[in-house]
Length: 238
Ligand code: CA
Image 1 (tube, rainbow, N blue to C red):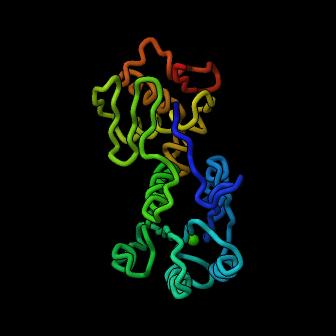
Image 2 (image 1 turned 90 degrees about the vertical axis):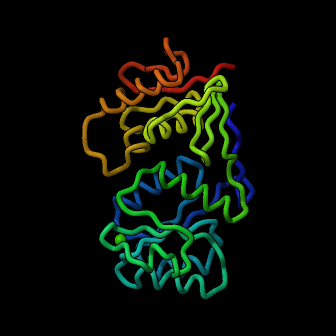
Image 3 (image 1 turned 60 degrees about the horizontal axis):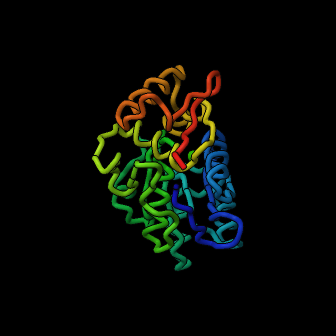
């Protein structure tokens, strides 16, 4: 059984995220991925629009890029904090833009992430921010069959015994456990685990799934099943 998630804003729609970013590849990546995860995503392509939206609506989290066409992310962040509203802010930054201002987070942001990033890294950071904000979005522990995966400690136990996964294997298993019986294509897995910046063949997915099966003792594979010509799905035992 996988733990259910709780929406911090309550009601039927998921948490609302404001994305302030002008790069279409990234806004599309975030919109698609976050909507799939049940978040409501509103995109602003420049700082001014972002600030206007922030004043109009309530958000559970703001993803804010530093390099924007008009007002930069630092200034947007400063103006948001000026209002006294403490919505968590996750800054996006290109590696070359990392400065003491960002790493010290003295601008009032709660966390930052360097581009390129993987979708799972983003989700992990979002969850941490929600937890820190005292709005526990999800339990840190996932249970399925005899597997326990803890997203805080990054530990995995199979039949009570600790198994050691690489970060990629961990992300794959977490994704499978969060979406039982959902068939993931190799491309979706690439996008979700490796990130939008990954360029290469999809057979890397097969290699990592195979290692994961070995480590969790899924031989013959009953939990992670291959859908030939499509991809993989995770079937926890009832
Ligand atoms: Ca940008």
